[in-house]
Amino acid sequence: MALQAPTPIPLLTPYKMGNFNLCHRVVLAPLTRMRSYGNVPQPNAILYYSQRTSKGGLLISEATGVSDTAQGYPNTPGIWTKEQVEAWKPIVDAVHAKGGVFFCQLWHVGRVSNQDFQPNGQAPISSTDKPLTVEGFHGAHSTPPRRLRTDEIPQIVNDFRIAARNAIEAGFDGVEIHGAHGYLIDQFMKDEVNDRTDQYGGSLENRCRFALEIVKAITNEIGADKVGIRLSPFADFMESRDSNPKALGLYMAESLNKYEILYCHMVEPRMKNAFEKSESPHSLLPMRKAFRGTFLVAGGYEREDGNNAIAKNHGDLVVYGRLFISNPDLPKRFELNAPLNKYNRDTFYISDPIVGYTDYPFLEDTS
Ligand SMILES: Cc1cc2nc3c(=O)[nH]c(=O)nc-3n(C[C@H](O)[C@H](O)[C@H](O)COP(=O)(O)O)c2cc1C
Image (cartoon, rainbow, N blue to C red):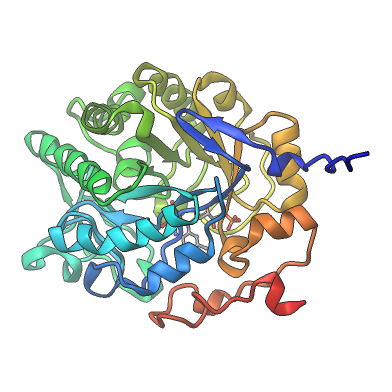
């Protein structure tokens, strides 16, 4: 008699996301690692991403700048130059060689920058000219932003469109628009940042216009079946808050249906900032129900609540950040219910090409 395979845990069940046949539901979160010297992805990323690839697994790249005004942190990659596109190719190839599906997260930090990161030392751009009152990242001071003129906005939308085209040229399977965590797109959406009086400010519809124009432009460029977006309506990271996050999340979920994009990736309300869990009375369920494509949930997930999220149909895929940094073989460990390596925050953002990056042990190494 043939032995019957044990029933897989919900996280390890297959899922068909549009044209992609995923073998499990454990997704690599977009994770900035600041090891792309001079904004060019480095060979060290080949090993890093390939370590975190499993057959039929979905990976989302670290946030990747769409233009020379998009950056606000040292050594983060871009995808607006030919050199950057070429540098991504071997990284994407390595993920594909192991059967992974790889999306590129497209990013513009807006006012979370300072003039040192900007061409000709100019002011960072934003929806507003209100500066951040908190320090930018790792103590870097932010300098006051310049409010984009209405007539300049199509150019920024176009930068996203070209970056998406470049991502496909680099071999990525699709792109994720970074509409979360207080960066440029979020700076337009959230009413405590956006103080515009033109058609990009005021009503919910107006504040979401910029995000949806980007969705439309990218969808027209590369096809809706290759487009996802990340949103964090409930977060207030980088002083980007909304007075009615549920209405914002729902409006976006419903509007995205018109473009028939592949997925919507939302950060759980319990993640007040991008990193720390706290209790929240809110849930993503209304957005999950409203959105007709694949729904990804992220933020503070472990094995058990990830399984529950799938079992209860609160999401189709569960996105893991910090646990995936320290456990390159995370899906395997979940499958076996094996112990997890602890992550070390101190090495999240250092520029070392190995330490805290590609030196976390696999199960085989520890057993
Ligand atoms: C080191 C680090 C870098 C991050 N970089 C990004 C990023 O580039 N883009 C993004 O959308 N979120 C980023 N995040 C947020 C994560 O994608 C994720 O939402 C967050 O870590 C919460 O999930 P977790 O509890 O599974 O870690 C980052 C988080 C960490 C810890």
